[in-house]
Image 1: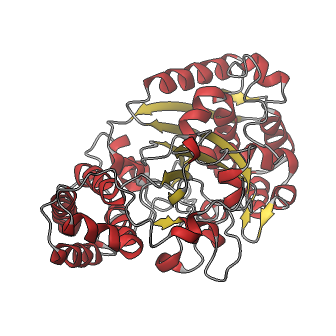
Image 2: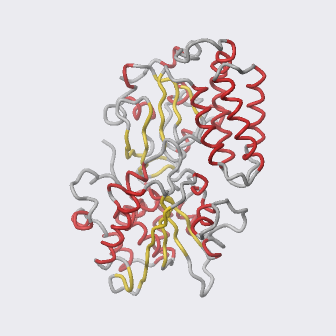
Image 3: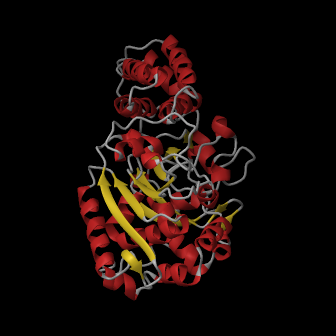
Length: 451
């Protein structure tokens, strides 16, 4: 049984309330940080922990904090990115819904470390239940003296405000989020300057993901070195994984970094294997924007070693035979799923969510959607596959923000690993869409290795 740092008390009745959260040790990190540690001490512990951003990029959190500019007389801000919009990802919503005070406590500790006296939690607009839950948790914390003026008599002041988003995926990008928070259209900014220098209202700002901020609580409580003992290499601590697709037990799991992917999929402790006795065909390991991998590559690295749930192991082989941890949106596909249809569905999403600021993304996503629909509906030609490849190649790396890359990578990986399935659609336009596409090519590796 893996160690739980964030979800240990998830099933305790009333854990969403301040009283029960306190009974289980809640707000000890605030007391420790504000009464016994300097802001610099907190930053140092987060650096020692090796915590990496849990929103997708995986950038070292402590290093990101150390970049924050500190000009005299200028306010600094902490902004929590709760705009969880990546298809296949729902861990932050789960955390906010069930243990809201874990986020509030992390916000207080992190704001103190950064010298921020006003902080914001930006939550996707469709998550109205979670918005109300977080607002209620803030009110509870403030009434108990954990927020407001002179917290715990230490002289530190902090106010936290919740801002609902407008429902745009693009606002998950930190500069687009800041634009939206300022009341503008959520278009990504050209960088530099980076938010650490000129962020919210032109002031130094740190933007962190919900899970990243919540993880600072066990880091402060137990120390950064203890946190770093969990996991392997530069993938330390625990990670929340949103597991969905054709699994026996989909849901949100907290895993120790370094867990074998096979064990996560097939063990009873986690996902319990593939539903309905089917075979595993492919996996999207980190949300819809990361490359899809066939079963033989998601369970084994290019060196024949078991692939692990770490940033390094999942990326082994680059995007030719590897993928990315991303936001932890783990989607499993059984042998009956159509990769072409799935890729078309993802591309429809990215075309719809493109802000239109960059022409490669604005035009390219629409073009890819039309070509994928053409192939999926039985009207494509073999030349369309090469055209799709060329379009995604021209989008990647040529946009202001990563949405263009996020749209290009699923298409590239689908063609790279399942080209035979694309060709089958084109050469068999009148056949049933329920055929086991591509199975002959991956027959041996598809057999489950763990029952």
